[in-house]
Length: 278
Image 1 (tube, one colour):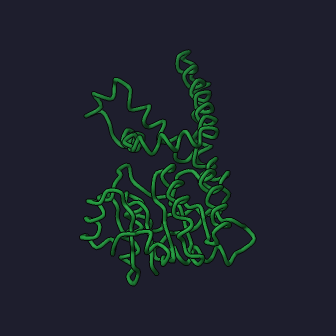
Image 2 (cartoon, rainbow, N blue to C red):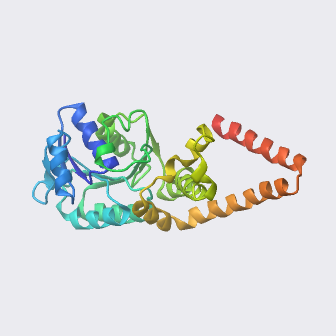
Image 3 (tube, rainbow, N blue to C red):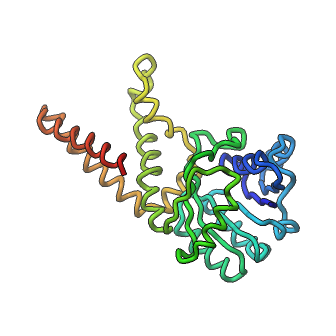
């Protein structure tokens, strides 16, 4: 296949390396940082630059830019895509870009899918990308229709060389609701938690719990701020629920109410066991 990738950060770079590692594919990339594009070429991750002149020959186009940039790229390049092309975005929210992507696909004749690979690290940038980033990971797909299995199977085949473990098919609305809880909340809590003045003296006192909770505090503030604001309805709902829950723990501890605290802790432990079984 001929693969076009817009954006050579952690996600776009990992897609490029995965397709090149699979063998037999030509990878072209768009990247505003020309030095980074040149480095990616020298490292063997890409075969050349993705331009207006060659984008029409791509079988698959992966957009791995920040949310606003992804929308602008999609709007500007949509008239250039082949009618045989499949376009997949990788934004962390889906409602806005899917609304625009589906409309443009219908207008110009290409196939558009919302996408979100459930993989990554706390680090960003091409230098942290790997060919195995998506191995056995889940890839969320938002299709334009749910009554066409051939369409869904088609995009799955195009993404097969990346070696995802499974594909989760959902709506843009359900994606954003779930991601507010499983991803965005974790970043908010981690980033807020590490601001405690006590954190400066953690060395010698911290182990696994501290490392697990603070790992994603180290984030890309430009990208995550965009995602949080775009998904603010679902994210604020989750933050409000957490604040209400924490107050119950706080009050039981402040009042020395061990019985209430034991009940709260037991409920949390039981809930963890319950959701892990699903």
